[in-house]
Length: 113
Image (tube, rainbow, N blue to C red; front, side, top):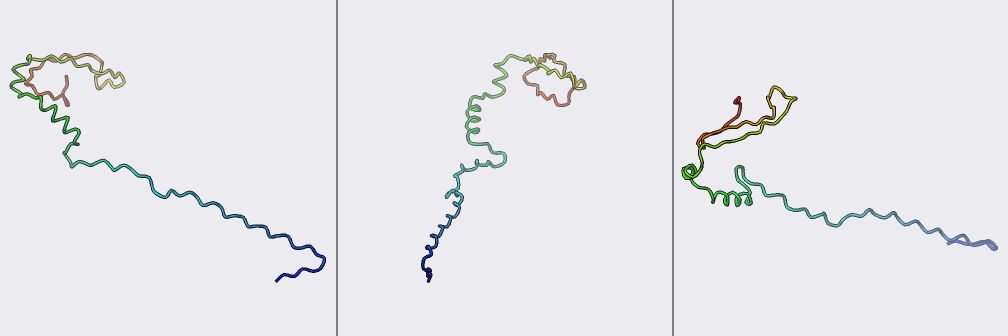
């Protein structure tokens, strides 16, 4: 118990304590992420691509029927890029004209023209 002496003023009121600092905001639930894309088995195409391929393949005709309906041989014009800084590649920008039968298989890998 606290006693006051006669003629003395009462002690000052107690200073209220400072409130604690606010707690940082914590989101109560984590954000909802979309599900990861479905992985296809190796060699398997996605459903959307399968549908496009099936539609394209539905319009195919047998090779012998295509050859009978098409002009033979076929002329191709190939534009070579121009890269003067790589002279060893011989990319001079000219156009090459090739006439090939439709039955030829084309592979240019490593072949000099």
